Length: 92
Image (tube, rainbow, N blue to C red; front, side):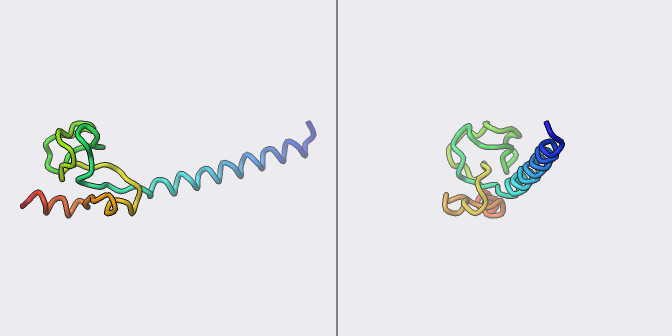
C-alpha cells in the first residue's frame, strides 16, 4: 500500500466518524414524552402518579399518567398530552 492510499483511508474514516456523531446528536433531541397514549404494558417508564417506577407496568390502555417516547412534534397528532396537561387531568 502506498502512503497516499493510507492517508486517504485515514481521512475518509475520520470524516465518516464525524458524520455519524452528527446523527447521534440530532437523534438525542428528537424525542419527547407523550402522556395518555401508552397501551397496557407498553409504557416507557415510571408513571406520573407514582403508582409504579418501571417500564411495561401500566395496567390500562391510554392512562393519562403513563407515557411513551415519541418523535418530537408528533404527540398532539396522536391525541397525547404534555406532563402539565396530564397532571391537570389527574387532579380532576
